[in-house]
Image (cartoon, rainbow, N blue to C red):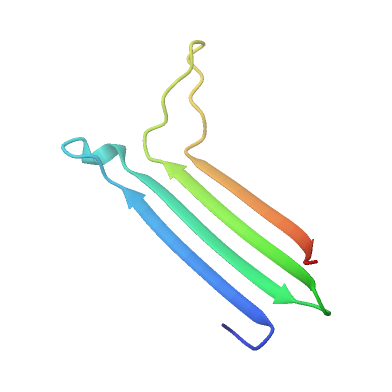
Length: 78
């Protein structure tokens, strides 16, 4: 808890296959939950995924190794 009304969550993980250690993957999750008014909450989330060695598709296109996503949500609890 950052304050009475704001919670922060941070989670980081790495997947490291053995013996192919160069093919590791990262995942980072960061999120804020804010209590606004009454049962109304605001959520702000950021996610980063990284594949160290992305695999090409059938056309030979190699995707970017990093994927960034962000979310904004409003929740009303009944």
